[in-house]
Image (tube, rainbow, N blue to C red; front, side, top):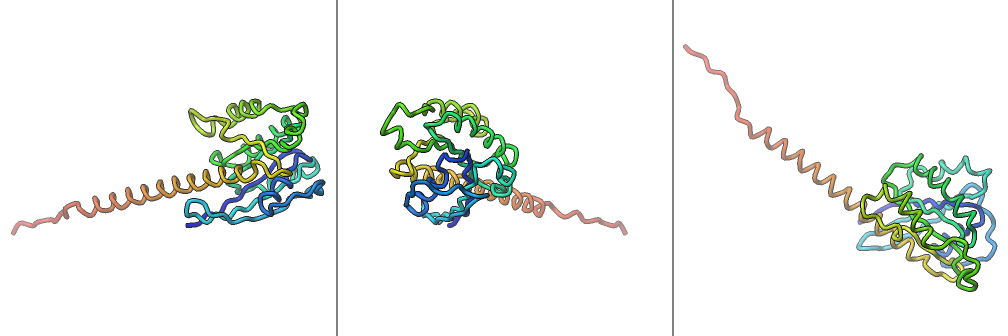
Length: 217
């Protein structure tokens, strides 16, 4: 079984989106990556639960002058990852506008996760943290909860990672990939049930007795 998924990475300039993606796809880290122009595209194949999953990961530019181009890149995306820098409260606040864009341009079924970057800076010096993890969880519960039904736990959609130290990066994509597979299974089950109902309707129709007209001599 196979699955193709398009994941779009969104967030303010300088939060480390490119480092995050490159660490996952190529398992490398380079300090001071050049700013993305428009968007860059990387792909990775993974095997999860007997599924061959082909991830198409779009790393979008965070600069304001490229903002109008973003919808072109995240059209038809099956997952959106919103990134912020945990040492920058401003980047967390800026993230909200990207969430609104996703909600406006994509259907309600899209999977959305939130990733706080540069965890290594906080591990080295806790005083640099400007966004507590609990703040992110509360945000997810408030703005993503309605998309996921009652009992939604915002913590399940929030992550903190370090691309530099390779901490938490793999987990983000593993959780998302499993959600994508589960979503595909649900859609397949729904399609199968619809087909069964249609077949049963046809069988019932065919079982109806034929009506013949009789003539008296």
